[in-house]
Length: 135
Image (cartoon, rainbow, N blue to C red; front, top):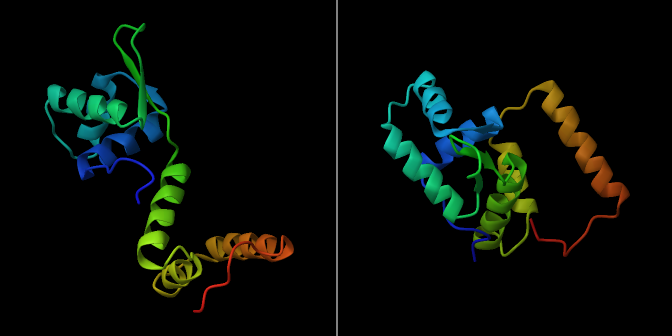
């Protein structure tokens, strides 16, 4: 069961721009999308922002003129939701096989590996949590 409404690829692009900008009116979002090579009509960007508001990923300050949009779901929160959904769907709710697949299938910088090790060390210190999956 998904933890939130699904996002289209276009909605994800707009959300990424809001994460970069913090908060912005439609025109600024559209200009940033254009800088990234995406040429959409103003009305298309407005529609995508409205959909994101309905799905509760974005909030709008309607008091401001022009209206200002801001992501209410952080990149980290969305990532956690999506990874939980993947673990639930593909690994019977166990995260370990998902994490192992990510680690084994990707290259990491030395700094990323240090960060990953620190997170794992903290988990070991806490004694882990949840059932132990068979990997």
